[in-house]
Image 1 (spheres, rainbow, N blue to C red):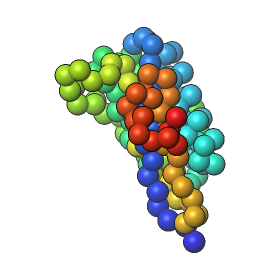
Image 2: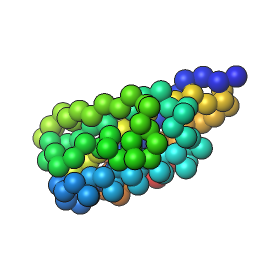
Image 3: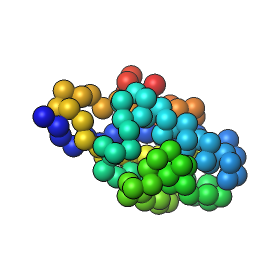
Length: 122
């Protein structure tokens, strides 16, 4: 039996440039799919947020290139909390998987500092 899951992910981006945002998003999505044995046809939706210092491209562009062209994708601005890590792309993905599945969250690069409490995320 399948059920709906949600997982989180994040990655740091070195610079506010189109290729850097697309490359980081590509790496994050590929690792999320690998760790969770996912493919786009089981994904219900993805929400991406970026810190206010990133605006050179939409992360959804990279996801569409990976086959997520039929998945609803939303990009938004992260709340600018003082002292928060800069240049971070975050992901919230909803997908269907077998009831026995365990969601494996993915935090890469500088974003690993966001969830050191999640061993499965590292």
